[in-house]
Image (tube, rainbow, N blue to C red; front, side, top):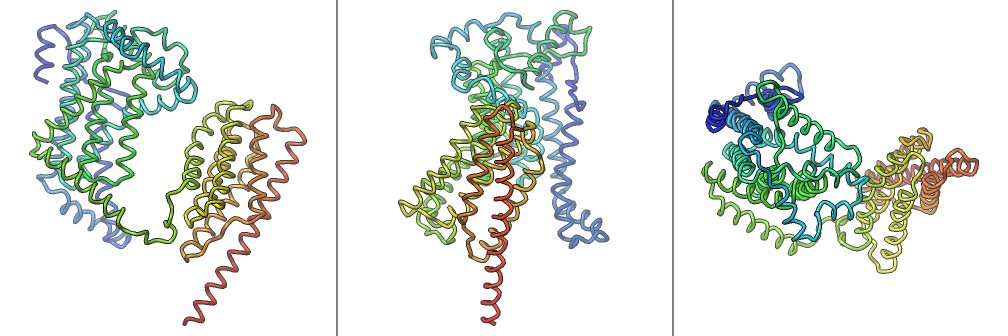
Amino acid sequence: MVLTAAVATAENLPIRDPDGIAGSPLVRLSIILVLFWCLDVLPRAAARSGWHLGRFGTHIAGVARERWSRRRLGLVLLGLFSFYACYVGYRNLKGFLPFVRPELHDGSLLHLEERVFGTDPSVLLRDLLGTGTAAHVLSVIYVSYLAFVPLSLGAALVWSSDVRRGLWYATALNLNWLLGVASYYLVPTLGPVYATPERYAGLPDTAAGALQMSLLEGRREVLSLGPHSTDALQSIAGFASLHVSVVVSAVLLIQIARAPRVLRVVAWAYLVLIALSTMYLGWHYAVDDVGGILIGLLSFWLAGIATGHDVGGLWRSARERAAAKRARRRARPARHPVLEGAVNVPNGLSLARILIVPVLVAIIVASPDGSLLACGLFAAGALTDVLDGHIARSRGLITPLGKLFDPLADKLLVVGALVALVIADRLPWWVVAVIVGREVMVTFMRSSAARRGRILPADGLGKLKMGLQVAMVLVLLAVPDPQAAPVTVLVAATVAATVISGGRYALRWRRLAAADQSIADQTK
């Protein structure tokens, strides 16, 4: 903020509060912190009161006193206001950039990338991923960063068991802003989409594209009217990528904080997708992402030292704990019968079938007149169902988990495609309601049986039902007229097989339940 005031005074530039859609960043952060505070205190108070409304208020005060001392509240507010001050300074210094450093280096960075990669990396990514579904997915990933920063800050400050760890993350964010804006002044650039817009003309309309246009309009307004004649802020700068740097700092803290494994995996995947989205959509050059990684690492390290942490020791301890945990897992035999022999090729194929579901849904919704691509993708998913069953039977890889995992993957694949067909107006909603209702009922019965150590495997009629559903979806994806008579007959046959198969499962489940009850009575 001192640096912002000095530059503003020297260059006769105004300092603005970077308001957004929801008002000032301070207002947004305050709302987020109050929300996380409620999520921290209210469930604990409700549990202590026995979920009794009359005693709820008393326990709120008790939990708040235990978890929120004046010292902790003061430190959390310090983290909040320091973040706000650094962010306001960062946004203003970024806005001053065209007036303080008007020269641009986009040509040099583009030439460097073409020498290293042989062409523009964003072109390689678009050739590899296409410009359809990938553009929309990566746009959502990129824009989600706008919510990721305040939400992750709120979670770190409020939910961390060690308030210093929350302040570590808040300080790392502040240093990302400071070092990031320094990189803007060191190497002023606009970024690929603004320097060479013709290379991105083939991308579809996305939220990220709308954001790019709004930032460009804001820059033009500031440059044409002058910074004193508009409340807009110039917000375009390329080197380095703070999307990447901030997520790097967050991922490292999640890793060191011994977060659950699923959260660590999601965090690393998010980092990879963020880096890809910055280049694919033209926000940054590849070297910008490299710079972002370095800034994220440096910010994390300096912030750890500033908040009294032994960064190297914590990192070594985290690695040693992870290695010891892996060793214990390898040495420990499988204790749960459902997980025995779970890692094998058939189960891997079932997992692959689950992973293609969101891609398939996106293609179907985007193609209301039918899509051969969606038809081929669905057929490939159905083929993995046949293939994993054959491999499991021929190689003796039938496992308890596979008996549950395989039909679950089938359900997700078929139901996801059916819901997408309803959205595309190629299938009546009541057909999906019948099919989904049957699957929910069977899933409940399978889970109930599994809790008692029993399995309800698919029978012959269930396989016929699955085959009809697959055939129906393939036809609806491929034919131009979903109302044709043969299609209607196929839909009717599928519904009939679905209902009869569900009834047979219900009878078998009742027999199993009755048998278990009889055994329990005899034991007594």
